[in-house]
Length: 226
Image (cartoon, rainbow, N blue to C red; front, side, top):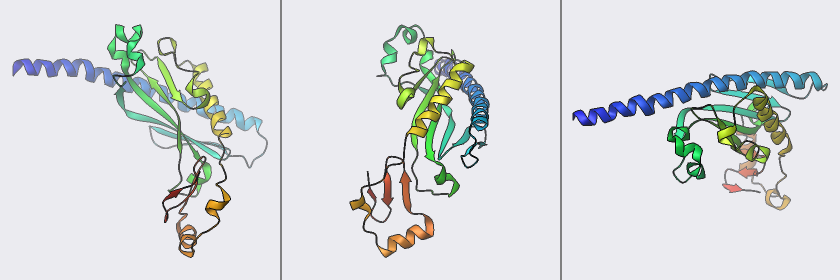
């Protein structure tokens, strides 16, 4: 029993402390994200003259911030857990992780893209898309998995540090990707017929689900339209 207790003690003193440290470091970086998001929106607001264009930031507690930019909302959300890379991940074959396996544990900041109307009109069936996720380890090194430039610009974990310039770059690339990622019209033949029941449902509770790439979905039919 004493030996088992010692093993538990070692795990608590090593792995649990490691996760606590990564959580706090990630939270500090998330606060920096909030600061730079506000600055970037302020800078854009000074450049964009048309007052109809949405440019504002809303804080939703400690771990989420919503950025309204044009017809889009970008949701930056920090996960409150710490994750280990899957065993099959190729980074485990790099010298950087072989030298210290604890570098393979990460805090994560997710970046989601929604339509602004989805939030403003409480359209609960509308879809959003994960366009990027920022991984931060105990050395405060980072990498990003994502769409567009987010998928290839920030992949060098051993060399990448979240400087202020890099944070601004990540934010600007996220904004650009969301704005270029357009809502597509569903094929006419698919949406040319609708029942009275469906129209009543749409009128009553916005049951017509909208997403940028999905198109529209009738809940009664449970049919996705691309």
